[in-house]
Length: 202
Ligand SMILES: [Zn+2]
Image 1: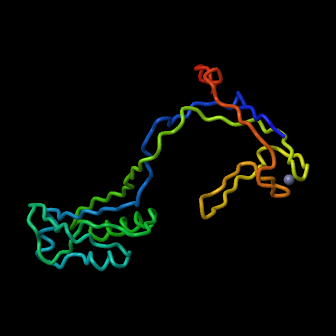
Image 2: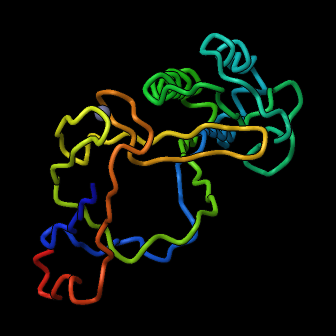
């Protein structure tokens, strides 16, 4: 038996991402701390040992990048002070890192100026261009030629089987008896008359 499945005219809508070939998704968050010695801090560090930043970082499980030298306000590198550009964490919990940053700020206050930046880089993937319109089909009653049950076409099952010479594919497997091609459906094709009016309603 053959069934015609019409497009729901009210459902036709513009795909806002039609034709786009890239998709942007958030990547792994990264946190950077930069500690810079203040002029007063240099005086203090000359007289007293500096805050044990390394120990503090380890306590909060923050990792050194290790490539960026600690800078004095004069731009000179200072000995005995840890590297300060940090890369946080495999599985970064934003709240935890922010809390750690506040502790770090308290600890170094008056000696080091701290800037802190938490960022989520964007990764761009290439994707096939999207169709210009989305639409749905009107749920339509169909009937299995094998078991005689009647049901909506939306219940039809898609399935595929691999053989040595190739594969077979169906979109009309019966949800009740499992008959492979249980009925014949023709889906209506979208035509320009069905496009939504440009009145902003859809
Ligand atoms: Zn059936």
